[in-house]
Length: 154
Image 1: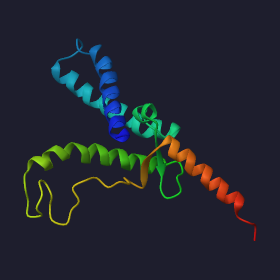
Image 2 (image 1 turned 45 degrees about the vertical axis):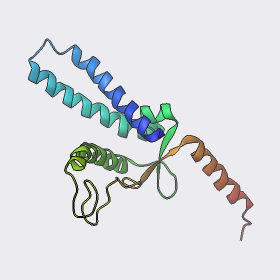
Image 3 (image 1 turned 90 degrees about the horizontal axis):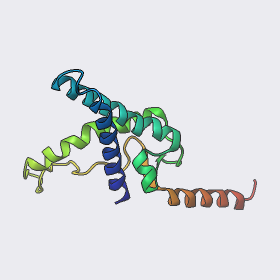
Image 4 (image 1 turned 30 degrees about the vertical axis):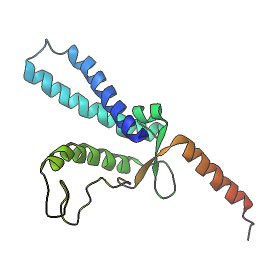
């Protein structure tokens, strides 16, 4: 549930920031100019939040508020730029299609919006990264450090 709330907060904060930025530009052009500016600024702020901020502090703004961190699999390290860009693009291109897929109706696979042999949900590990609670990440690191100290040297 924390992940969904974090995504909602990220969306809200991005739209709020873009709304404040576009408001100043509404009188300079027409409606088309304002809409184009809104789309460009939304994508730029989304990239900055989901990729650049996540590179710096391991979480977007919404994830920071909800206490969620983004880690690289399998070693729980800091994800790199390439992985974060892939994850951002996947979310940008996959998520908007989901309502359309659910509205298409029942298919031969026996469920609404499900194609034969395909999963109806997003994979848990997008581009080799996962979202975890900050407290769980601290516990994992403490357990790994304790195990490393307990192992005898060969």
